[in-house]
Image (tube, rainbow over all chains, first blue to last red; front, top):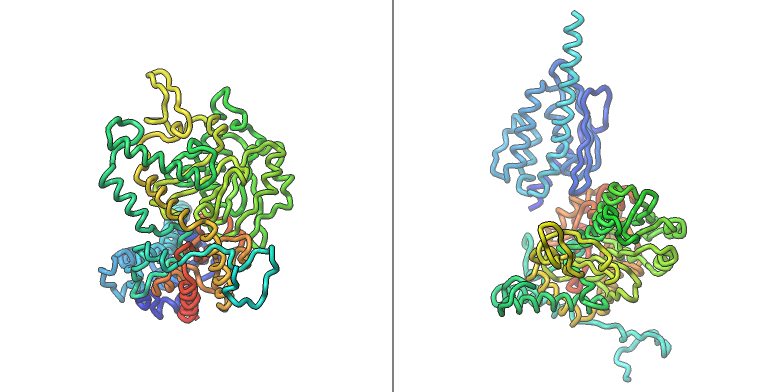
Length: 156
Length: 439
């Protein structure tokens, strides 16, 4: 049964996470904690001209949350903000879907492996933890980006 | 006396003998617990989460059921037959609790909803006394006064005191924990001093399993005239408790960890102290007389039991105490000691496993937390669940302990009177499976 949860893809991402390690420069960051298990994740984003030019992450978490952070990096790094948000929403819908949501592979890529997580309500939070931190970091990054755009506009 | 077992080593006469140990038949005990017949994911249930909440025997379920079916009425306010029966059963449960912990009188037993509420009740006695002129000075806090806890407390014995200190300007201090998971009392005389008003300590740690020896600490507390509270949530269910022998001022424990329903807990306090404490929650049942201008309050324990109490739950707790007493708390304690020794040996065979807390079955209870190198406790718990083995993972509401040992979370197996060595074997086998999945 745990095959559904611990797919090869998830174990791979958790053992060799993509984009792990906090990087500079960044203009938005967030620290999120799962109070029930004590897991923690930090996410940094660098937003420039409406594009996420870098997203980095680090933290202490289970295989599910580590893999989710790795997949998140793949899905949002280098993407325009609206595309990243669409993927964020699709991922959330999938893992909160209690196994009823048919994942869109083109949109979610390796993220489709998380369809199994949806059947374990106790683990949904693990998968969402890095994504929620990402969304918070993004809000800050977007604000910083638009502020610097205004400043640039003011000078011209 | 005849020799029934051929022992390799003969213990000299006058010393405790092998067969002096009280024992019981675990398979007969298990037959009383309907839930233990369940399967989980196709495997027999192996319930190793009793420190979280215990399972309930038929005798407790029947007592609660019989109350609702045949005797249900509100307590302490009705003249009718049902009201009288319910009141007798509720107060009877209080008397059983008092006898179980060696209290001088049932009036020293206050029913709460859990240990957390019991601890908060004492914290608010300090808070309310401090805010009310003319209160008993033992409960009045001022800046510079100190409350002492330890690094191995459950959050329920940390947060109420933090809040109390924030409200009153008192200082919260704590005993550290040693590398082997014992209380560090090397600075006892400095930590317990003339400014100390209350020491609130966990008796048996819910995460490390450590049983804290209290005699030395109590002696020092008496020297400085402070009060002592024990969080006995993990001790009263598992070992004999005598509040007079322990020379303690308050203890808190909860029914659901000792075979009783959820929603019923106990604050025991020395009657002289309870009498000096202002009320906690206001409402029905806790009053003497009420006018629209002023209320006078009932004597303890009623003073602290506002509103309709958890009647059926208290009756369930009484039935649980009958059940435990019939087996004998010494026998239960010994059973868990043997299981713990067996489990510590078994767990030591798992490569990469680290025990947090005492690694010898001395001065500890049957709760063992551990880490598996490179594998997160959530993943450990998930694979074990696939095999029907139910353990707790996370920070166990004792996050400072996790930090002390440099981890975010731990995996915890905890035992009770119905736990068997076969179940410990299932845990050890399960951990091998965990290592295969995450190899």
